[in-house]
Amino acid sequence: MPSAILTRGVSHRVENFTESVIREMTRLAMEYDAINLAQGFPDFAAPAFIKEAAIQAIRDEVNQYSVTWGDPALRQAIAEKYRRFYRMPIDPDRHVTVCCGATEAMISTLIALLNPGDETVIFEPFYENYGPDSILSGAHPRFVPLRGGPAGWNFDPQELAAAFNERTRAIIINTPNNPTGKVFTRSELEIIRDLCVRWDVLAITDEIYEHILYDGRQHIPLATLDGMAERTITISGVSKTFSVTGWRIGWALAPAALANGIRKVHDFLTVGAPAPLQIGAAHAINHGDDYCRNLSAEYELRRRWLVPPLQAAGFRCQWPEGAYYVLAGIEPFLSSAEETDEAFARRLVREIGVAGVPGSSFYHDPRLGRTQIRFCFPKQDATLNAAVERLRRLGAPAPPEAPAPAPRS
Ligand code: GLN
Image (cartoon, rainbow, N blue to C red):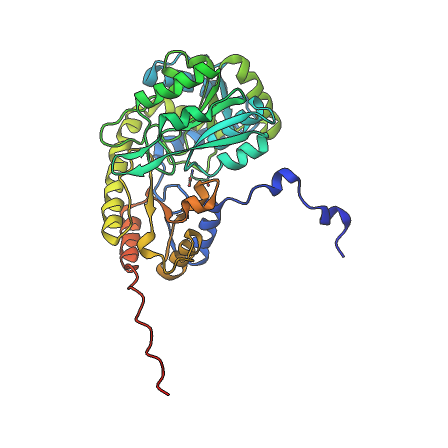
């Protein structure tokens, strides 16, 4: 007989969201020995220069807590990087909070800056975490659709404007975007800027894929637009750029008055990010400009390994403009009107041996993602090749067979 404390269970807050489907698909991929194109992390080596710097830091006894909001060397490196790449004036002592990944930077920012009843504006489909993040911070999200088509993923400026009101406190922008691969253009960012200024709203930007861009596109931090520096929290990290997703080193850059709040939440959640890995990250940022500039070319090759074969196999998808995901239409493969994206994704793991993320994970209403699956491509050629080979076996289902003739009496 369970005790009363157990039957009462978890908090209402936690009851309102489910476990991460992205992480669940990784578990499933391991169980069935499938190729994991679900959770977005590289299967190739991190560059030697970042690893050596972290190893050296451990040897040098950087093994105790760092300053809670970040080792001074890393905060300095971050500030200088933003000056070099984007001409952003960042004060390492007042603006930077180093966190346990961009994930923690986002949740610490939302908890620090939002009150229950505040509204956030979020483009949909959205990175899975923003849903639970909103619930945990007590904010009410309003979703604005990004619609995919031959011209990429776009929003309707009028729909965006209609999402703002006097309760709106923040908009979350993820560019380059997970899961659509959209890169917001300057004119789109200007539309967002005008609404933020008009309604006195904060912008919280997740720029973790800032160095993965295709076809000559440029990354534009929203904070660099006129009127936005004082109302933008810029979030990024080393995970995707330097292929160290397990290190958990990210950051939030914010005006000092807001950074103070973010630092408080961060401190009580985690005390600090791993100290020696912060030194490794500082070294990589200080010496990695060429590496960052080459990253897009590397990912361009992987994009070419995956997108055309997916299209040839019958998935309906656009070329991503940035980041390393493809959100693909699966209509031709659904075995019946009842088969959901989740059922399809599970079938793909079990029968074909490839894992992706069901589209519904990226929508507030699962029905909206029912005909989609997300594949990621931060993988070696051999991995992508093997995945493509397996996906070819999928084949569009044959039309339903003619009903068997009625038995003769
Ligand atoms: N951002 C990655 C993705 O979307 C990894 C998510 C995670 O598990 N932290 O797949």
